[in-house]
Each structure stands twice: as structure tokens, then as C-alpha cells.
Image (cartoon, rainbow, N blue to C red; front, side, top):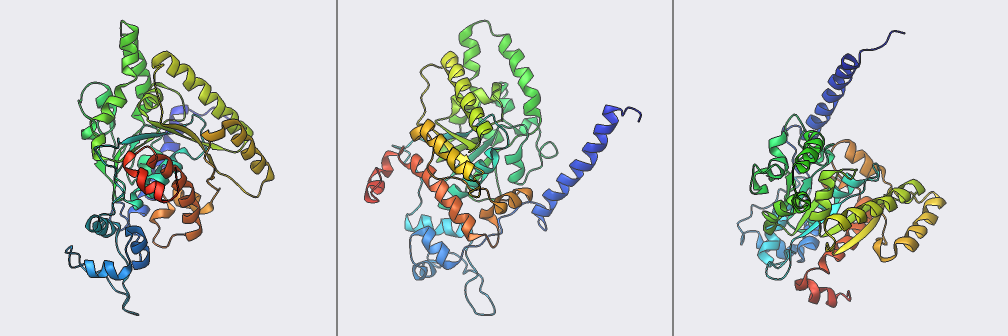
Length: 391
């Protein structure tokens, strides 16, 4: 068989595969040509989300100038409320969960592990959706050149997203704030700083730029650039989630030093555990060199892709708990075909018109534990947590 010209072969592969990806994005956006939030919340769901009963919500509709929700012509029942309407009720009744700007800092949480295939981006996007449904103001920063998170929010990397749309102009000193890169998403309550393949190509340029610095202090200062950039926009949000590259490069180190907390997804398997230990070893070395005084609110491992059918995973989870102690969340993210199938369509179970309630309950249990770790960091939430018996 004759040798295949690499360029020709790769061009053929890219042409067909990129066409498929574009079609999948179009399917997720049809018929609007831009991704939209289809899910509605029943009066019962909305009442639980707002913290008021259904009758109270119905009576409040004219008070806040809300058009009455559509009704099912068959039984005349309300079809449901949009998330924007739920937020309007929360504002009206004072039940928004926002941090107190006078006492509570916005928290930057990096979803990070350099082991690929552990559900890092899936965790980041689903957690962002969970938080937005709770009513928080969320900024998601995609720093991974694979741009999975950007795709999940309805943008086609490299076709719609260019270098100018990413955080790179700020890192290059061309912008003085990250505000230029922040864009709204179809999911109410979530803004996005997107990524594309150019972030991968930028790694070499960053190395060369650092190499031109004449002092150790100047070189170390560059690794705090993302932290400074986030500070220029953080006041508008409660939480900033960062999806980090699955490798410890220049951008990943910026993420490490920008974060207030580390959420580390890892499967309960030997190779994943070993990789996670190596990840901790390497970040220890980098922080020791670049910022020995660096502090985190918490560093916690989230067990992902957990398949309860395998006894070995149950046993290895116990190993993780023994090794990581308080630095591992007690609830696990179970392996779920609903999550996998949603991701294949660039969606999550949270936005399905008719979501799988069992899956939502599972994810809600996982994310509630992480949310509690956040609330403990906000002084204004201490009294409410105490009333719930949480310290």
C-alpha cells in the first residue's frame, strides 16, 4: 500500500469531522440558530426554587408585571415558568442566594486535573447549570484549548471564537480588563469567557515571552496575570468557575494561582488515582517556586464516573477517602448514560425539556455538598447554615 500524504489525509479527516461537529451544533440550536433554554419549571418546581407556595407566586405575577404563563389547552393548567421568571420571583420576595458584597468575596473555583477523561468539563458545565438554577450569578472561564465548555454553551470554537474573544489579549497586555471577553450565554445567570484552539498555540508564545523577562520576580509575576484579570470583573458575580486544560502548562499554572479553591475530578480507578497524586505533587512544586504564601479555601477531590456495578470502584473509593481524608467529597458523581448522551448533543440534563429526575437528584446531591463548601466561606450565610444545623 502506498504511503499517504499526511497533509492531504488530515485535511480530509478535518473536513468531514468539522462538518459533523457543526451539524451537531446546529441541531442543538434549531430552530433558532442559536442555543436557547427550552426547559420550563412547573408551578410546584418554581415554588420550591423561590421558597414560596404556588398560590403566592400566582398572586405576585401582576405585582411584578409578569405575563401569566401559558396554559395547557387540555386542562387549563399553567405550562410552567422560565428561569428568568423564577429569578423575577426571587428578586421580588428577596430569596436570591447572592453573596453579600460587603462581607462575602466572589469565589474562583478551578475545575482542574491533568488526567483527561475524568469528566472535568462535564463537571464544570453541569455545576454551572446547577448554580444558575439556584439563582447565583456565575462566570465560566474556559481556558482549555479543546474548548469543550465553550461548545457546551452553544459556540463553535475557531469558527465563531477567535483569539480576540479569549483571555489571550489580556494576558498579552493588549487589554486592561477581561470585560471585553465576557459574553452572555443562553442559560440565564451564566456568562462565559470562551476558548478556542489558539490557546494551545499560545503556550509556546507564553514560554518565549517569559524567557525575555530579566528577573525571577518578573517571570513569576506573569503567572498571576489571570488572577488580576479576574479581579477586574469578579464583583459582578458570586462564583467564577474555571475549566482548566488537562495538562500543567503556562495557562494551567495561571489558573492554579488565580483560584480560591480547587475542585479536582478523579475516577475511582488506580490509573486516575495515580495521576491525581502526581497532579498534587506537581502543583506543590510549582506553588513552592512561584508563590509559597498561596492559600486555598479548600482543595477537594470529586469522585466521577463512579459505576456502582463494580465492587472494585467501591473499594477504591474507600482507598481515596483514606488517603485524601477531608479533601475528598463524600458524595460521588455516578456514571450516567443521561449525562453522556446529553453531552453528545452539547447539552446537560439540567436543560432538557423533560429531564430525568433521578439524574437531577443524583447531581443535585453531589453539587449541594460542593455548594455547602462555598457557603461556609461567606460570613453572611453563617446564620442560615446554623439554623440548618450546619457548621
